Image 1 (spheres, rainbow, N blue to C red):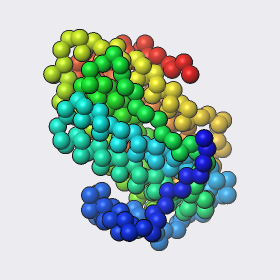
Image 2 (cartoon, protein in one colour):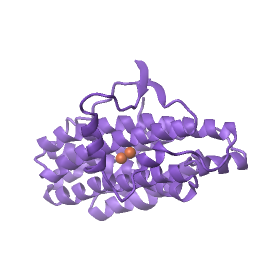
Image 3 (cartoon, rainbow, N blue to C red):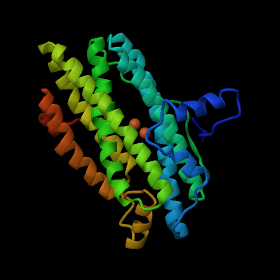
Image 4 (tube, helix red, strand yellow):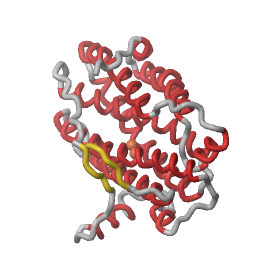
Length: 287
Ligand SMILES: [Fe+2]
Ligand SMILES: [Fe+2]
């Protein structure tokens, strides 16, 4: 069911608390990207085509980041059921707030690029997999691992590349913030895995290994869908898009595979999972 998504702060009595959270709990470094966006304008000059392409990309990111907030908040009940330590529970909520903030930063960039920071999308979000074959501890690990070790670790690779390419200063500040936050989000996965894996018995480890081909296949399919190949861009347009924080899809896809094969699968193997075989035998979702 499609509806209009706008990521705006309203004027309710909670507005000041929202702003206080940005200044305190969610703060990272000295300078916040919100103030750069507030009085920001573009330093370079760009063709209308580049501005349109970049604002469409940032608008799609806005929708994706907004959805991610629901993923992190849904991890809380799973971590509660798994009896996880408190820091994992507080941190997923912080991460959920980070994602809402990311959505609003992306909306700010769309505005900066002259676009309308709203999108037609399904406002409903999907529940996380329940993993009926698994104990509560395994189910929580599977979802935390999918989000942190797979999805967010790929995000770091993409954002790191985008940071190198972005020359527009205000957008660079936004990309810096996104990248710094995603480092923490990935750390959730890797540190939870390190924390619980030693407590798993052989059967639990075998069931987790059996899940990995599904996780890899699902992530690959989702990421390829998010980076559609639209044909080779002319060099000038590609350079303008990169300056505005947008990596070409073919470069993003190359980085996706380099990260999955060169970083994620070997690192999971180092933790004791059968990840190299899982990557090789990944299972594409049927629908
Ligand atoms: Fe994010
Ligand atoms: Fe994230």
